[in-house]
Image 1 (cartoon, helix red, strand yellow):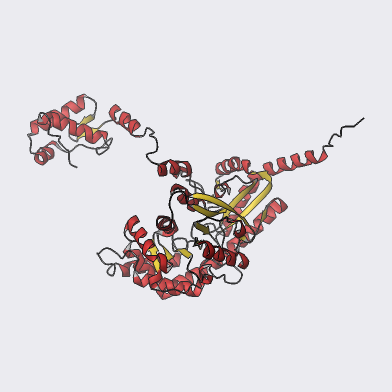
Image 2: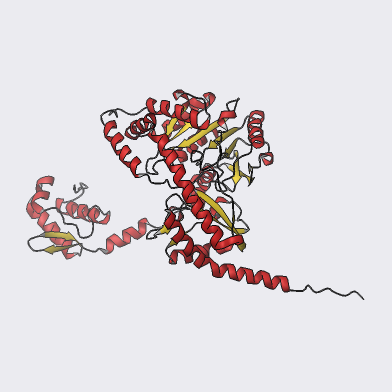
Amino acid sequence: MDIFLDGEGAIYQQLVRGLKNAIATGRLAEGERLPPSRDLCRQLGISRTTVVAAYELLRAEGYTNTVTGSGSFVAKSRFVKERSSHLLSAIPPQNERSRIARSVFDLKNMPGRRPDGIRHAFEYGQPIQNKSMDLLWAKEIRKAIPRATSRYPRVQGNPELRSALAHHIERSRGIVCDADDIIIVAGVQQAIQVCIQALLNAGDAVAFEEPGYFSARNLFQIAGARIVPIPVDRDGMVVEDIPPGVQLVYATPSHQFPTGAVLSEARRAALLEYARRTDAWVIEDDYDGEFRINGPAMLSLHSSDRHGRTIYVGTLSKAFSAGIRLGYIVAPPALQRDLLAAKWCLDFASPALEQVALAGLVQSGAYTRHLRWVSEELLNRRTALASELMARFGTTASFALPRSGMHLLAWFNSLGADAGAMLVRRCLQEGLGIYTVDPCYMQQPQALGLILGFSTMSVADIREGMAILERVMSPLLRQAESREANCANVVPLVRRVK
């Protein structure tokens, strides 16, 4: 490790300051050995006497401890603690985006994440593990290494991957496109960010599902967009409630998050007509759309768009591995140049090695076979979860079976949403992670809703997790029933009029 001299004053003083700075900044950590004096005098071109004297002063001031025969080691230092405290002190937001980001983003409390040390968690948004696919992925990575050029990858993405995806989504989602229409991005989050940069100014109105995907909403809010919440019912977003003057509509039509509703044909047509009539753009986030559990295949919204107002966004991370941050945009021709420029501004291009490997998986048909396996597994787990809900909670829980996806939304109407925090806390104490629907709402819902993910849990895990949930929730449900019974027995007083 280099020790930097500041060039001011005697060499001895410069060395002492340089070593103190290395300790204070953590480059020399607590318990770490200082460079041997002979090595340091050769590195800096100074006498060993100067180095030994500097080390002795550091020891005398309490910065180091000397172990005979082993050298000098960094000791606990008041200076380090004081400086760390100073670095962690709060400062006001430096711009408007940071101010908004602080209000909507909390890295330590991300919705849907699995708490540390928890055995069972109904986490959602996590892909199901397929061990045979892991082996194929490792094989494709090895094959891709010599083919992934050392030059910068293309901004638009690997041509082979784009061509393979174009063929895949034409068969699975009804989208007729070619490789030139596709832009590879670092997952759905970046796809949305690319759209924001290309389409929105601060203050522009964005129609957003209520409830909806909170991470996407946060991105729009941080960009300074004005969120216009549009209610969702069993037929998806209530399109007729979208007001005039909206620049962009964000929708999850094939599997609405978090309700699982599918946008009806009438509303799909109405949404596309709204976009055509008002020159608005529609981001179609195909959230879990490929995981069809049961029922006929659902065409994408993009497949019905005859006026080029829909930006289709898909992901490979959720279908395959969350650690592979790759997704794609099917860009309308009129927007392609702007979207590519926005992608270039964000990170220049997505990683080449993973793109080449994924192209091999999609071209070989392994990716399609994986999706079929995933859908079958999800059906088994969803069936187990629904059976447990009915057996343990009966009519106190209401839910709809989603046609696709990796979670279901269960409502406990006898409990208010304010019971959610206490329930989450008590479940954590019992080793269970659960997640309320509250982050999906701009206005808190009236009842308690739980997003129950089942992709990362075996059937046995689901049963054990539901047993814990029943044990924790039963006292709360009994209290709610008792309150309702007492209210039903109260006879209202009627004031007599003389």
